[in-house]
Image 1 (tube, rainbow, N blue to C red):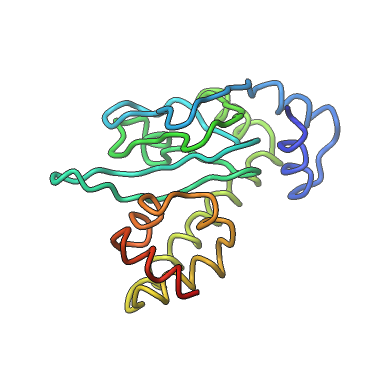
Image 2 (spheres, rainbow, N blue to C red; image 1 turned 30 degrees about the vertical axis):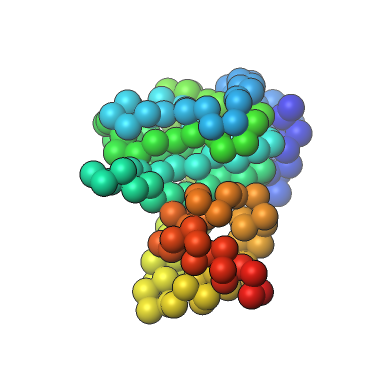
Length: 189
């Protein structure tokens, strides 16, 4: 259950076995159902998640009921409602597993204890934040001025499994397209 997390950590920093075991001891397994909520709008995020199997989606719903997906965490990745988690304030988004998922969760208190006391974990946290920021910026800048087909091509290039794993409705909400437009353009590829 912890091997993928161990691989993730050791691939990014030099870390001894005792420290690695100590970090892993702060994570607990969580099995979820398809479409199970990890966080509802207005709740304060209390956990950071590592995905062993499955997928976590972060999304918002506007006044008209339209969903907009913001982020996906697949196997071997971390996911949380970061603004709520960091600021310890109510979330402005939902977080749910879109597949049956095997997760490892760590509480906010334990997470920050590791960040504050283990330099390798602080380094990995910085990498997670930097990668998330860069990916978000590429998506924002890339999508500005892109037509629908270019958005799909961007996702295929940067997240090859995305369109295979996520429903058309959810993928369309991430790309800013209608599901019918996405289906039509996917058929042309």
